[in-house]
Length: 178
Ligand SMILES: CC(C)(COP(=O)(O)OP(=O)(O)OC[C@H]1O[C@@H](n2cnc3c(N)ncnc32)[C@H](O)[C@@H]1OP(=O)(O)O)[C@@H](O)C(=O)NCCC(=O)NCCS
Image 1: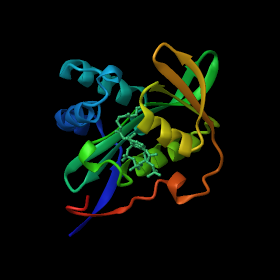
Image 2: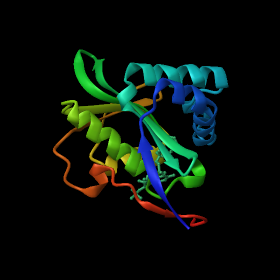
Image 3: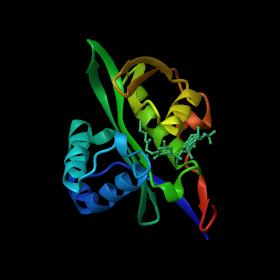
Image 4: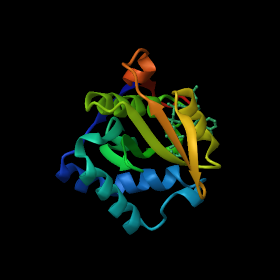
């Protein structure tokens, strides 16, 4: 049985209804990276609300059927050291669904959104030992710039999308495939 990945933004009432699940996906995604994530459910919930409120159209959630398998939160207007960025603040995929293209599809949608909002530069902070995420960003054209404590700044100059990866094409999923 195949299920299609569905990526969508959320109305505030959906955000409220789905908050428990979003917190859980976040906790699972950071379980092996405790130094880079928040821990208490209250703090995580507050953070997710901050992400959504800062740019509701930039908060994308990936569903497989009814289940949330990941989300990405970007703000299309973000000032960093006096420069305007489209900022990727958070990006998580449930570990049970990692390595299957969910992250690529989510990230592609987020970049597409930032491009449509006219951003020519996208930035993010990633943990210095978070090799997996860093590889993900390097493969997608981000470059390391500065480091602040344990956080590394990565930046990408955005072009018109040219590859399916950049378009955030949703892959088809086969249940139990792993
Ligand atoms: C980063 C993350 C969102 C990627 O999601 P995903 O669904 O696994 O991504 P995809 O399946 O689309 O892509 C996998 C790619 O991610 C990279 N990657 C992810 N985890 C990796 C790991 N442990 N080791 C090496 N590469 C890894 C690879 O570059 C891989 O390459 P490919 O595109 O050639 O296949 C996910 O790994 C995650 O939730 N990580 C924990 C939270 C986190 O670190 N978020 C980023 C904070 S800055």
